[in-house]
Image 1 (cartoon, rainbow, N blue to C red):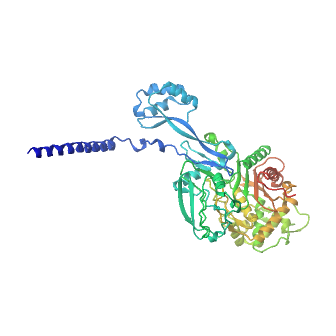
Image 2: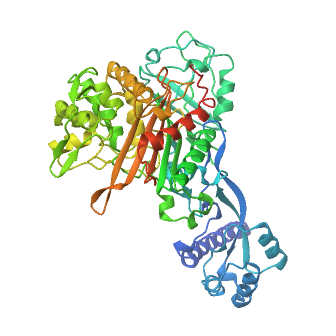
Image 3: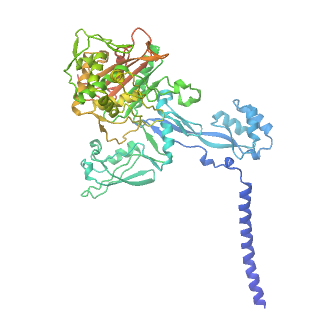
Length: 608
């Protein structure tokens, strides 16, 4: 009997604590269920602020980053004397309004901001005052060290660090993926091997090691991809790791060609960065020269673009007027408008470049063919005539390009025909939306019906409106042996390219571009040290429903250099004031100044 009693007592000693434990758990669950604040009031400090990765230029210069700051918040459920606290805080933080602050302090929310990003002086004052019910939050603030310089490219974030414009918006939008391929796949030789054609790697293990996090992927390597020879040397892994922040490891089995490669991208790690194709030095020069021109000509604005001909990497992109992204709330809409990628314009004679390239490639004409340009062409109430009138009635295709003849371009277009013109313009992506990595981008404006009139007017740049980036990327293709690449802001982004005209046609166009500078409308872009090529453009804008002779866009596309094309420099000035308004007089000298200054920076050796 005593043994049985002992067993019961022993069981009770075990069951009672266990029962008590379960009662506590059930009570806690019940308490959390009914006492938890509403979803909007739930608060996890680590999820409030989104930390964007640093953004670097192509040389590793930081152009957007985060700095630590301190912000002020309150748990309004614990505030005992809101009137006194509101008055005390307003006496320290002069930009706060008592009514708004009192409303926050009496909101009964578990978390509410009082003020973001305190100055050191404000922080010290609040700490010394010992304000009850107020807490400090270790915050971060997005800053742009170069102020206005990259405003339209970088864009800006909201106060919580979410990108809402420019590259910042692109980064935030793509953060939903575990790994954002920015830039996309780029292959490097990791070992001291010879550059091996990519087709010898039917499948390749791609390994990326980034600050402790790694991922693996298998991709098909295309024939066009080859390992850049500049990286095939000793200690190349160290060099790449230094430049990109990534590491690579080499395998010993060289016989089976199992060399590791880097996949250049960035993970969701807050310590990673995005590297752009922009060059801060070049951007500064383009910005300075464009600012000087827009101010000097009292223009509405301007665009400056430097594009790598071989891969369409944007080395510089400037739109004026601009703004300071550190103070974006104070900027007006006209300042935030990106003329380079969002603005669509009838660009005038620059499109003769594309018209003649299409006609030559379609074999409907040759550069030596003669066309009569002595008589203006009438379309309805409009008369097509030449700004630079020819002294002889018939001129060659080369002279039509060099002298920028509207009549000649129109007659070449008629010979090409509507079907072929549309086919080539589509291939040149003049009908397609931009794929550049910012949300502020436009699709060209084209007529619903491509008529005979459109055929003629589009040949010299009217009736079709495109962005300056469209012009630059298409011009690059026509110079780069006919291979088109979409303009990109990302460094070393993989792009296979698309053949849109033949290599032969591309060679012909390079000759015409050079002749336009040596003997034609682009003379003011001529530089002794370099064989510059280019094409001028001048277009009247529509004002109150009709074309105005007093409102023009003057542009020039310059090529550095024609012996070894590497870069396109495009300048467009919107409504320059004064007697002259043509691209040859207004824009060509600006391109000349820019090329003279950036050529040494870009390691372009003088040719003469």
